[in-house]
Length: 141
Image 1: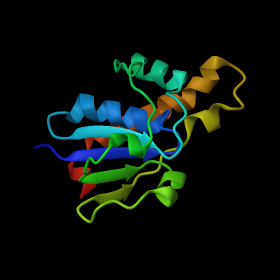
Image 2: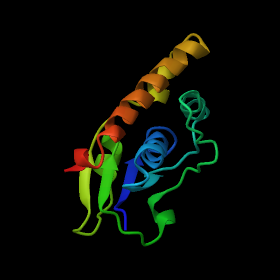
Image 3: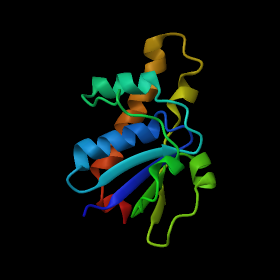
Image 4: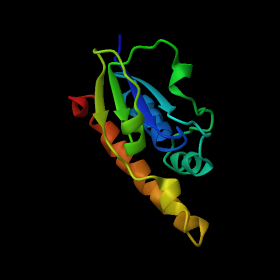
């Protein structure tokens, strides 16, 4: 059995969706990836766009909360933002919690004057998350 990893952020709309997808694509032979949010709000269309640019289709992924994952037991829970770290529910003792914060692309894109300018932080964070995932599972120890 491959270890289960949960990526947790506030809305399960961007960062955690990217991390789940990259893990399935790059490390699916070693880890079972899941994502959820403290307050899910739908997958961000810009996240879908920049992941597609990198050859990773997340258009079929859904935004979900932790309760929707049922009684799955995770070996790892990775919080991707401070809000998720502070609001993270209690997991069984076998679960290792790790915090790896990434900037919030929607927040950074809020003042953009053009769509291209708005996509820049999404692309940067996408690439940072990919680099993090490439170091898994060793990077979780």
